Length: 405
Image (cartoon, rainbow, N blue to C red; front, top):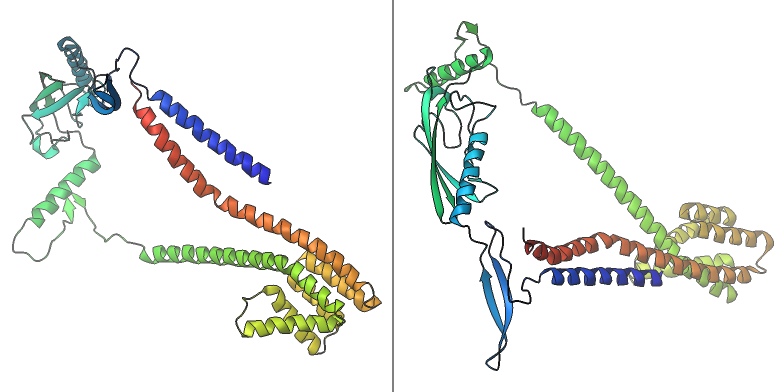
């Protein structure tokens, strides 16, 4: 397992080295002829850190250089302007409308030709078309409204103006939309009245009877749903806490197994009986707990319960069997079988069996310790992956930003 972890660490280091080498190799912008490739038109300027050597006067001097993008010639700007005008003609009107009849919002974009041409819009009828291109329905009559658009195009240091006109008409409303429009007009007229403390809603508009009711918020159902969700989450959380507590309890008892077996082996070897050894271990733990010298250890708590059961008249065999059931671990059930066998056949050979069990318990404890260590490493895997992503981003993003289109 240790060899596997070393190989994994070496693989991660190798990945970092490859990424660093790739980033360093991709960042070369200065060729052997002291030439730097500029960015394409419209791209951001480049900031470069160079080292300058000038015979004996300058040696490895840090020289910061700002490299602007490639400039645009007048001929190129003219081509971009023509492309921008075509894009305006294509994308200005929505839903396949034409300049002679516009009822939907128009699209006034800030740039065209992939950002190479900037556009500044000016309309002569903002009461009919808002600054975002929305048609003001109430301000446009049935005969329509002529709107003139003046677009100031700029490409680098070159500028050009593009003008065109279009007719705006109110959109055709359905029966429902027309009714809502009339209702809003009635309500607005009523709300603008001065000197009235109450707002009276209309009961009839365009021959249609109206009935007003407050919209139900369904607060009771929302609170009930929220409470159900909270109860379910609390239940799931409690079950998860219980599961983790049970797992922690079993892991702790598993780790203490070799210690319990060794203590029994030592006391039995000193001439005590099994019952005396068991009570001695329980009493020592109870005394230390009373003095707060040790933290709570679940296996010794179970041994104390077994001691009290025997003191209360429970048979030794049944008390040990209950102990094995409460621990619910195979290692302690194996220990109980050895102890019960001792009660049936006598203590002869018990120390030998416990000695063998102590050796096996130590190996199992080492294996459990390794397992718990691997679980802790797994829990750290997600933070490590996040850190790896951040490091990769720190290396890759500058390299990608330095690429020229």
